[in-house]
Amino acid sequence: MGGKFTTQYATKVAAGGFPVAVDIQVLMAVGKLTALDDPAPNAPKWFAAVEMIRLATDKDWLHKATKEISKYWRNKRERCQTHVPSSRLTQRQVIKFQAEKVSPDGQF
Image (tube, rainbow, N blue to C red; front, top):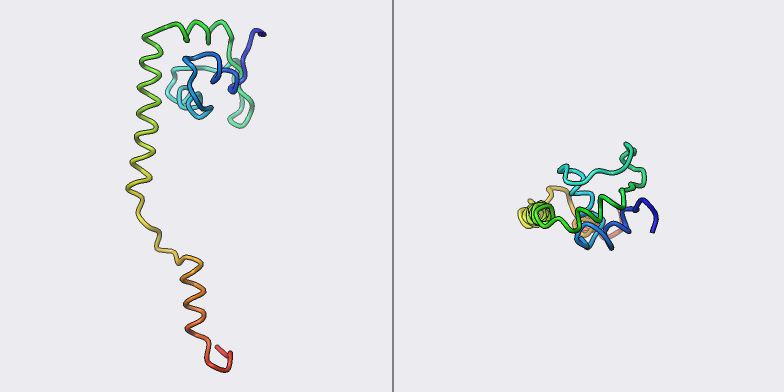
């Protein structure tokens, strides 16, 4: 084990074993976790191993982090459930519309 973790390793070993890398991103977004250096948004993130291990043993931090992650997934579920259908035509509706416009001799 080196002195730093990747996001994937951090999700498996440290920070309470959060199951997916998205959870690490959520914790970073709410300021509960910070990456080493100042990486670009699309760059790999590295975390200090000693800090991750310390956080994994901090009951108060784990409680707050778990609450933030739960809030994120609850809000995401609510957004999906209240999704308003798009006013755009589906592919099936477009094909049906085109078929209705075709005359018996195949001309529009």
